[in-house]
Image (tube, rainbow, N blue to C red; front, side, top):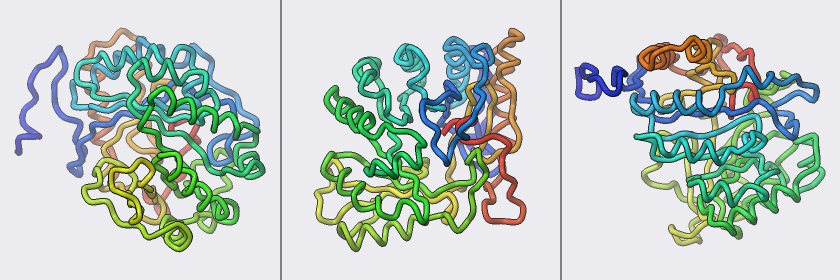
Length: 349
C-alpha cells in the first residue's frame, strides 16, 4: 500500500481517505451544478420544450457548502459551478464566497453561457471567482441563433468585455464543433480570442443532447479543427506540461510569445481522443445526485442523505462509493456504450 492509499486518518469526523478509483485516478475536482434552468436552449444540451425541477428539489447553498466541505476533507481542491446556466441562480456570488471559505478549497471556477455576465461580472470578481469559461460557438448571428435557438450574441460579447474590465483575467471560450455547421466559425473565433486575450477551446460534439440526434458523422474532430487553424491562422506548438487533470490538450501559436494572453488554444476531444485515463473529476447534479462520469448511467443520492440529517461520514462514504464504481472509460463509439438517461443540462457541464 503506497502513501496515497495509506490507512485513513480522522479529520473533522470524516475518514480522510482520498477519492481514488479502481484504476488509481485521484479525484480532486468537483463539478457542482446549481440549477438545471437556462435562458437559452442550445441544441447540443437541451430540448426546446423542457420542464425544470421544482426549486425544492434543488440543493440549497447550505447543502452545497456542506457537500463541498466534506469533499475537501477527501482531497477535493477545485470546484466548478455549472448548470443549466448558473447565473440564473440568484445571488450566486454569495455561494462562491462561501465555498472559497471552506478549508482546503483552492479555487472556485464557473461555466456560463455569458448572457447575464455583464450584470454579474463585478460581483463575481469581488467574490473571488478564479476562472470563467464562457460558451461561444460562433460569432455569426445566424449560427449563434441556430445553435442556441435564441438571440443573445451581443449580450455574450458585452459580458466578456465587462468580465475583462472588472479584472476576471482567466477567461476561456468554449466552442462546440459540429460538422456541417461550425466549420466557418473556427478561424473567426481563433482570431477573436487571440486579439482579446482569451484562451479558446474547441470541444467535440458529444452524445448528451436532449433531442438524441447526435451521430458520429456530426463530430468535427479536434484534429480537423487544428488543421484548419494551422493553415489559416498560424503554426501551433504543443504546450509542455499540460495539467493532467484538464480535459483539454493545449497548444500555443508559434508566432506569439508564450506568456501572451490569447496565445493558447485547446482541444477537448472526448469522442476521437478520450481522456478518461486522466479524469480527476466527480459531479454533483443540481438535484443532489453524485455522478462519476458525464456518461454514467448510475447516480448516488446525496440529497436524501442530507435531508435525512446524515453525519458527514455518510456523505464521505457515498462519494467514495461513487468514485470506486467509476468505469475505466466512457466507451463512446464502442458496442458497450450506453447513452445516459439525462442530457447535459440535467447533469451539469
